[in-house]
Image 1 (cartoon, rainbow, N blue to C red):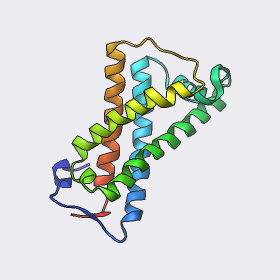
Image 2 (spheres, one colour):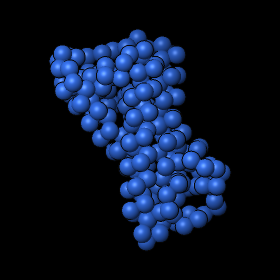
Image 3 (cartoon, rainbow, N blue to C red):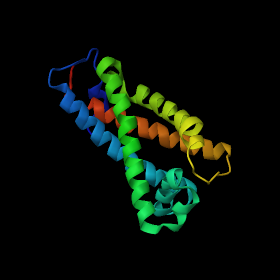
Length: 167
């Protein structure tokens, strides 16, 4: 990734050709963060990635997801990557309007990850059809929060590394 300090500068404004670079940053950051998130969820929950993907698909399919094999895993992967791209796009659109988001990607990406954690756990999961309700412990919250902070950092650094902004 190179020297992260090099992406911090006193000013940043969007260039005329910056929208393509923002899209590139959103896609790269969103896909990487989404895949890392699957691995993190597997490690945190001590489950294979396929079961994590079925758990994601259960947000739409309910309990049936765990009996649908590869089809629900594929749906879970599509849903995970779609959500990841949407989450990254929100940061990208915000960065186009608030260049400080790319000047300070470490602090603000981490803060964005906290926000993503809150939205996912207080809005998205409760509104889903997911039947699983893991035992909530301080360790569980801490590990999942750390995973979302990492997600936010990946997205923010990916966008900051693009040439969309004049520094």
